[in-house]
Length: 265
Image 1: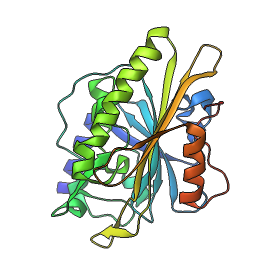
Image 2: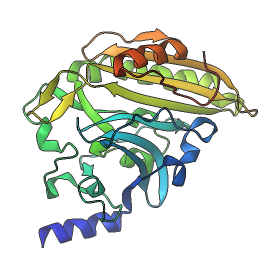
Image 3: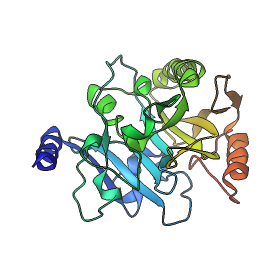
């Protein structure tokens, strides 16, 4: 009965996160020129269109083996200040594909294919957002970011220090150099799996990374930048998108990794 009640609360709130076979089915608009970043091969990688009240706000490639996302992709329209939500959700479709897309509060069940809040208890790691609250453009968008498929264990000093500072700088840069020209800002934020796990289950990333690309009305990238930092309280490196893609190819051990479907330096 308790689980049924929680499911009803979730349905009434309009929260959902639909696992799709291909991002293009539901959330192509999230990506620069409609094409997602490189999708890693393997049955553990799930494509999720992160939705609230029937609107898609961002997209996540999720790794059910490491119980962390690979990346979340999103657009930046404007920044707002939101109070942080204290209710976290999980996606039941990752455990039971036949279920509906509505998120449920993570306290309602345990999961073998995704992290839950209990996995983070008594650790030195925050639930580090990939699509961050600081780059959301509405209250609903901020609420949609509070799903455990959008976070990974992040050193608490890094999350609340250098990484937070970076997110604020990116918001200011894109507002000044992209949005004022009525261009569109696309971002991708991700993590690289490390060698440690929380409670033997949730991988602790070795690195966090992010990149942006500002598309003009001709769908060309006018400004772009990449950042990557080790999961400790040090300043992330400021590099070109091309260099970041090369680093990710080495870190993920893949031959090719593209972040944006357009030329970005």
